[in-house]
Image (tube, rainbow, N blue to C red):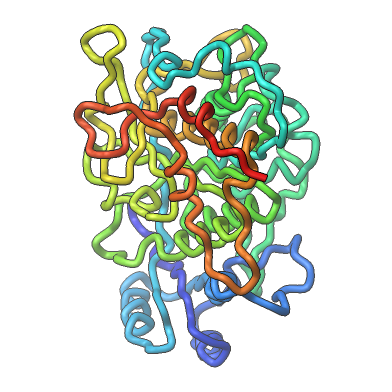
Length: 414
């Protein structure tokens, strides 16, 4: 993956530094988090985390690549600049579908039939930032997509004249021609497919979804905008089945993304990330290597019945929690009659997103928004402290999620 060398993400310290940025020639400076749907921008009162976020801009340069390198270096040396990075591309963490249809994943995470049908007490909105969801699929809750706010296309963002705008004002229709919604629909099914005895059932099968299309070819700036949009529109969980490996030429990659996730945490939103599929330590990846997310690795069947082991391809680390990720069947975009089989930590993250939604449905006060003026809570650590796991051979992380034990042992909060 190659950074987009004519676009830089810069966080500055104060308004004086911002004015100096705008005075530079051969480049356009855009507010990274200023979208057209906002009114009264900027807010009159900003908490520390909000101030850091709103001090982040996207610079689009008209200079050739070699001159952009000099611009990168000069900004890096500026004492009034907190960080500068190239706008990096991100990829989905999934492999080509397999043909195996062996169903084992519900047993692996102890998601029993008695848990599948439940009354939603406090419906938890889950934002799926992905390739798009076929929200016309009959196995998804159509109430999820009844309002345009829950169907947003981030693939056509325009950065111009200091403002981030989205020209695609029409709601995303089901199975929009020209887009590959396979990955996003598959992930959505794992999270929230209805309990209707047809294809499959989601871990949080009553959860409303947000269909936030960011793929193909999103950059860090695009994903930051989608994360903030989800948090501002009351998503309690964000599923991020994507990421990128840290680029040696782009050492600050992920800095803007971390700020956006901190902002989401401050709103009481939990961000669940796929660990990645290269069999290395997650510290080499963003956002999987962050400490403000729940990072999920992949599990596969072992040699004997009831035995599960870490997938060889799954990234790993001390903070990693695991869920099934090999040959998983879920909903197929554009074809209601068949299942799609896919593998990767993308699928694993979706199981945990569904579990977190169930946890917050049962006990919505497990995580609360941070008071004005305070820093962000670490929503990920709060949730991890309440997830029960079982040992996973071959992993150095927390182990494989246990849905039954987790839901049975949640504290009773007022």
